[in-house]
Length: 112
Image (cartoon, rainbow, N blue to C red; front, top):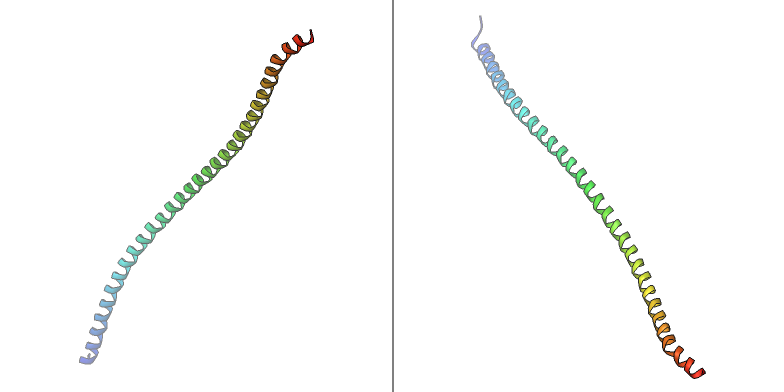
């Protein structure tokens, strides 16, 4: 036969085990919720990494455009300088031709 103290101890142990079992169940629920949150955060991190990669590609493209623009500006400046030289040369030739057109007949008349 069981004495009263043994019965109390057994009932106390059973009650503690039931409490522990219910706490374990709650922890399992909380753990599954946390795992869901972690999975969502991992998905978000992956999406942000993809977005960052896309932004890096855009940045590379923009840098390439800037480099091309700088090259075009250099070519344009060289062309402008060549055209300025050619215009000066043509103006000089025009002045020489005008002087020759005026001085030629005068020299011809003076030579006679």
